[in-house]
Image (cartoon, rainbow over all chains, first blue to last red; front, side, top):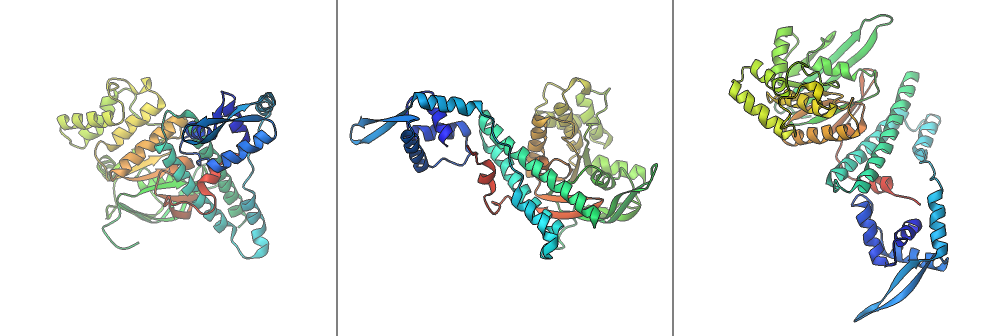
Length: 171
Length: 249
């Protein structure tokens, strides 16, 4: 959330609620709605670390709103963020440990574990397809987010298939 | 499963072994299967698992070594090649990975031909063709030759051809296997649309995205059904969707 808010502020000053709306518009309905409380907390932290500055703006008949802008330090931090590459996604490690340890316990069958896990992934895949169909086709960013999630899930399903092939050979 | 009307498709004890060079390949090793009217079933599994062979057996394109098949309650074991050809014209539509359109016939003729062969009057065959091509976004392509179309367009023509006789069962063998991501989405959208209108579909695919359009997924391994799962689309346990879509920074 930190960097997203900094990036949105690079365009110009904004207050918390505007930032929430900007995020929603950019990422579409697929992305879990950002929580406004979380946005305010993050803005407070960013201000404390000197990356942004807030200014109270009076509003007639309503409490003041705080409009934030990016500081030079903030702009540098953002530049550095864009310079870095992101970490690789992780293998589903909990499932992997179950698969690795199951035979020693005698409590679970590995093929049954794989089948159960596959059902869950397929159901999630189905929901993602529905989301993609429901999301505005012209919102490229949102569509790419969903497609990325689907491709990751596809890779997980392919990997389950490999596990099953290997393990069935042993039996 | 309760005994209601006969399932569109039923198979029992299907076995098929390919005898080529080298060791015999056990492609299908004892498969029981029922597909009810209106169901959309996907069969997934690694390549070489035998899922395409299974589809070929169900469509009468290959004969099983043993086992039985019923289509709409009628047993097909004794069908001759000619009888199967009639069956495929009237009761089973098939789409393939490589479209298999007749390359020297126009788009319109490719779609109308099976209707005419099934005895549909020319005027009605034409009306059906027009309606299907419009529905599939191919209006204006009637006079094109298959080779002039993109892969995605050719597959849509193949889909129109498969559905022109309103078959109770549509078989699809890796229909997106030679399409890009956009073409895959398009095929998925169209299969879902025909399914919503009541079309019974059996889809063979290694692509989980495509399979997730079905409401039942059969996992096929080494010639056998390893799992047969209804997809309910209900929120999975755990973090589910939001976990998958969570962006961390």
